[in-house]
Length: 387
Ligand SMILES: C[S@@+](CC[C@H](N)C(=O)[O-])C[C@H]1O[C@@H](n2cnc3c(N)ncnc32)[C@H](O)[C@@H]1O
Image 1 (cartoon, rainbow, N blue to C red):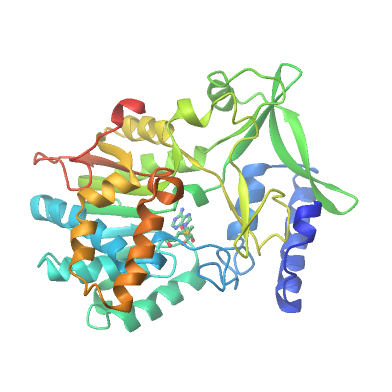
Image 2: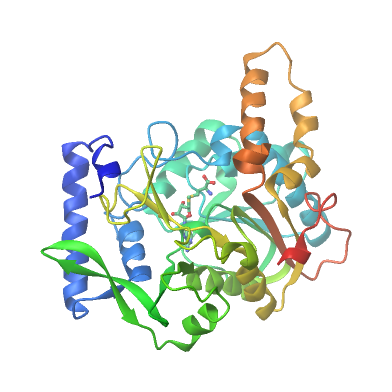
């Protein structure tokens, strides 16, 4: 454990016991694999091992009592803004909404409430969520925030073979396992995890995988350079594309186009952990209690969508996207003397501020079979040329 991590708040005895159980499970997997697993395999075990992983276990995760706050937790106007893109597409293509990785369920509640106001409620709102623990939380949130609409929500076990409507996900791609590569003495190595004296530790292996090496060939060839490749997120976008018959895929997340992501100065990549609102740089810090994430390479997502025959509808900053969806007009409708107005003003500062989420976070949309004008969100500023 690094010095910085040693100063973080200690987990409860119960949480620590759960983390130790997960550690034992990961150690068994490493031994069974011959002493080494890829970082992507480690990240999958740490986040999604049934009952023990960060997202699949009992960690609080979201909000002030958890490890991080996402946009739907800042203001209901966030989901309200996304509903304007969704409503526009449903009006043209029909169909339903499929949300991927719905977290607490707040975003679903916000989108449904605004779609109802816009008189564009779909018959069904489907959620695809890996975590059974979060599925339960989502149902409870919907029953509390939009009880009259909760019946419309269904949870899917897998992507539908054919889907029409809007697929939407906020901060989902960054939570998918990533490969980590490093250039050592002129050779690209695949970073993985082994056991050293019973503790998890990094272990590099020379890489022969042509897909991984093709990615690295485009990176700065600087000795020691280290970065991530999101093969799983790329595959996920292709799978969404294969399912989508007509409609839109809308994804919001933090990240950059490839040129900015794989910049010579970003020589240690973007992989980080979140623990109790602190950034953690040791990915082995309390597995199962620490969120692991890497930024999204939006150029790679565009390539994956293109391979699935999707059209790129727009790519822009979160600030530009939300403003074009009318988030400021929605805020102006609040009573300027109310507590809600003050709370909303603070939230908008976070969501739109250039130094906060406004520029680091992006919105990207892919479509199939849409002929109408560009959807709200991407009309004011389109940065597709950066991808
Ligand atoms: C960082 S959280 C974001 C949650 C929520 N969208 C929000 O904005 O608060 C990531 C979510 O994605 C889910 N997730 C990750 N990979 C997934 C996958 N392949 N399919 C469905 N859900 C997934 C996680 O379980 C979790 O709910």
